Length: 85
Image 1 (cartoon, helix red, strand yellow):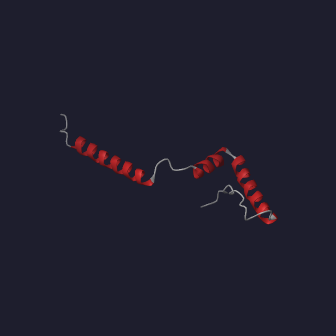
Image 2 (cartoon, helix red, strand yellow):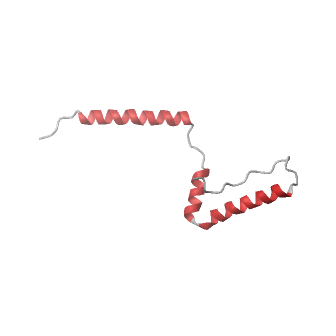
Image 3 (spheres, helix red, strand yellow):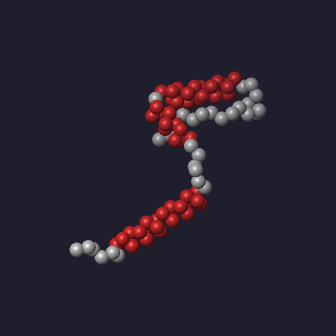
């Protein structure tokens, strides 16, 4: 639902010393810090949202296909065994 606040980015040289930009940045940072300090669950949610992907998307696709193929081979192999009487 996009309800978690985001950590504001760095200031750019274009912003200069614009007080409105600095105030908006500080307000956004304060909201993020408030949410981060509110509870352990909120902190966990913020960390999980900001985590980087561990694998490249093409690698993820290859890994999922390999798991699906190996799983189907395992089911096929176990399904072909005769039942013990």
